[in-house]
Length: 113
Image (cartoon, rainbow, N blue to C red):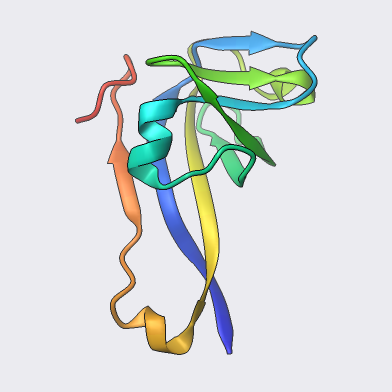
């Protein structure tokens, strides 16, 4: 049996930009993606702590400190909103004993705590 488990999380990231005219996705600081093992175009879930909105999109690499919602997702958050970004993966039962997700804790300036 395979189980879908949290692979990584950027906890309490601050939205720095929104762009309705972009074709879609979330721009995430490329260094955060590397540390969290999130590939470009990988599906991620976003949970908006300010509004309660929960949605899925795909990640693209952004510049340092950037958390940007693009396209339709830009309607689900405002600059300054706090979000949680989560990626998931499927694991075999044998992998679960040693599974530990990567968690990056961020502050209001998108700096790691």
